[in-house]
Amino acid sequence: MSKKRTLENFFSPVSEKKPRLSDDAPKNHTHVSTTPASNHATYPFPISDFPSHISDQLTKSPAVKGTVINNQPDLDLLYFQPYVPKSIERDLFEFLRRELFFYRVQYNIKRGPTETTTVFGVDSSALFRPDGSLVDAQSGKPIAPLSSRYRTCRPRPIPACLDRLRQTTEAATGTSYNFCLVNYYANGNDSISYHSDDERFLGPDPCIASFSLGAKRDFLLKHKPLPPPPAASSSEPTQKSSPQKNKTPPSPSKLQPQPGSASTDKPLKFALASGDMMLMRGRTQSHWLHSIPKRAVPSSKSGPRSNTAADPGRINITFRKAMTKAGTENYYCYNVGSGKVWKWDEGRVDMLVVEQGDGERG
Image (cartoon, rainbow, N blue to C red; front, side, top):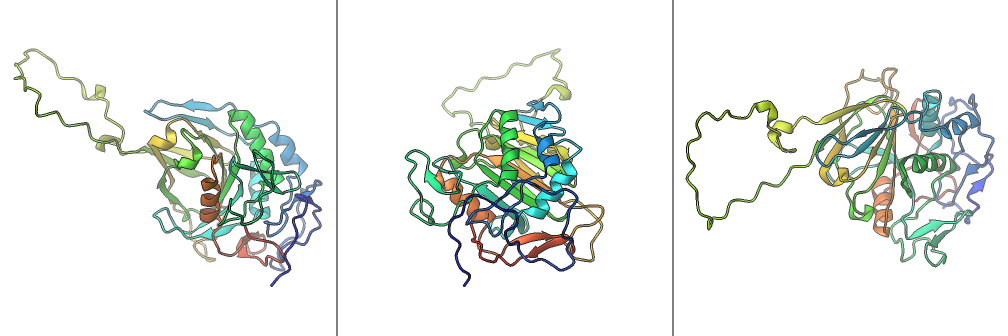
């Protein structure tokens, strides 16, 4: 059994021991961060901060003004094309893929294949101090690991790199966020079926900011089926309709079908490019479903989860706000689970299991 690390300061030197990857992985990168890495007792290894050329450009985000999309019933979107400046979107994608740790969780519900994902944050009932300790948001009293507050998980703070993006997102959207979920799509074979993020712990009409980095992927939205109209009461008298002569029936083009009916099965489609951000707000989550369908790409000899030159992979980052501890337990259960830690290997051009050393799991 590895020796358990005591709770260290959240920021620690970059020179901390990293997980051992393949021998042919490159050891130097063009841009190197000069700021301390983020570290925590729940991290398998430290996470580097952004190089200055990325962090400097992120302060100028969003790159363009968002477009409001609310021309459908119950739909309220703010679409940035792009949000991340084009000068850094590729570097940002490669940095996060290289520096973050991931998990592979197999869902029991019909959601899609095994996902490569990770999560950071804690709900509004608690917060992290600068030294990384977890305390009650109201009283400031420490919350012990695996205490009665969080029996099934160990929350971990958002690392400095992702927290920079969170802060600029809050400024651009006027909404606060306390959770960051990151999903990695190796290629077009990775997908997620129709669902909505309408859990009670998010509160009514939640705002969710969704970033897309890497390969372009379709983002589909369709309205949830509407309940059938109530049947007419049998006690009401039936009126005999009188013939109406010379009345022109309405044009088919002026008939507005109800969302969810057979004539509106075709979903809305957005081709999300690298650097784009879609803010879903208002009644969107409670009345609409969204998905990322599979996308045909040339096959790879390395396997169905490997990258190809035509599809380098995609990272999806979502910021959201969980109001209660049920949100914390849900996100760590479904985005960490109990499996192994995975990390990008530059030499193998793939995600590989890493040796965790003396790090802790979330």
